[in-house]
Length: 256
Image (cartoon, rainbow, N blue to C red):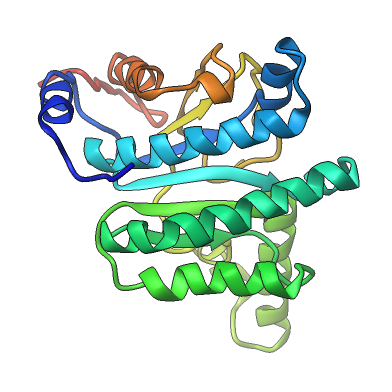
């Protein structure tokens, strides 16, 4: 499926009301339950979930979203059965090999956040290839959170700053929110305006805990393989109905 527009897409998007957030983050939950409800193996849920990933990336690009972060594999997901982990790694390889050229042609920039030091060499090389190929692109920035855990990220940032202080490169009293944010894996990426979790679960699950401090949270009951363009647009509509205060006096996002 190409991201190139056709008449029906243009009509659909022309009718989409409200402003779009600059940065949407997604916790893609429910693949296993989707498969279980249909008497299928969990791997089939993951396979169908990958097709949803492809659709949502393209729809977000068409909607004019600036940044889209996908929680693709957490640092805790390694605890899953080896067969399931191996299948997920295969899906990642398949996605990059199948979709990278098209995403690059459509001006999508890919960034990866998460710990890479202990990744298998072939996985690490594919992630680096995706980043290197698309680094100069100026369209949708697709951030893939892979082997990512927010607590690990915060501990890592603390260690980086402590080491800089120990080397005399940074005064302890110069550590502020900006300095801390610059030491995170998301350095240079704006905080998410909207964070969506599918499947009805209502928790962050160790995802972007620093960055989501003032994000609008939308919990969709839809299982990830069934999450479609209409569900994504519904989350944006809910976002537009919110009032963002950031601790002060806010203005409704839907106000013109």
